[in-house]
Amino acid sequence: MTNKKYILGVYEDEDVLLHAIENIRAAGTKIYTVFSPYPVHGIDDALGIERSRLPIAAFLYGLTGLAFALWMQIYMLGFDWPMIIGGKPHIALPAFIPVSFELTVLFTAHGMVITFLIISGLYPKLKVPVMDVRSTDDKFIMAIEVKEGVTDVNQLNTLLRNNGAIEVNEKEVTK
Image (cartoon, rainbow, N blue to C red):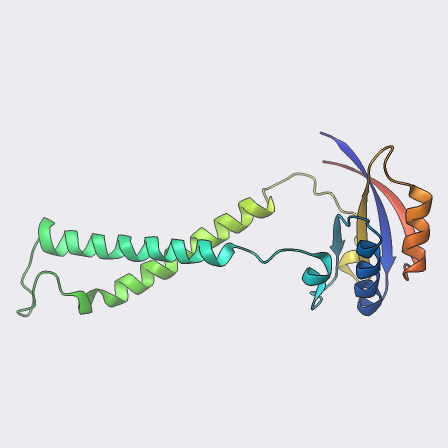
């Protein structure tokens, strides 16, 4: 378990926050994260967050589900227990469409949930570190990690206040 120190800038308006993010990144300061009570359009681009690769994972999970469904039906109805139903051939692909669709959706949904939880680190925890409780209510919180000997706290406080922060706090978080 490590203790990390953060400087938190508290903002009231999302437009001021977006402008502050651009100015602070332009000043060369790395922003750890921003907490928001609701999704803010354009904040990912402002923070420089790359586009997610989850759609690629979704496609691969769907492809796996489709392959499994087709293999399962062809094996069961064509080789393991072939039955003649209404004069249809043993391997009737049009009849396999509903089951194939359902398993494709099932594999994709479960795979995406599991992948998202693993990538995000949202494992069950006894204690969840909260930077500032007001971020779930009506304030926007910008967190900047303080690195000992590298970060000038006074300069960072001035930078945050000059860019519209209504309050600047220090917080130590145990992870």
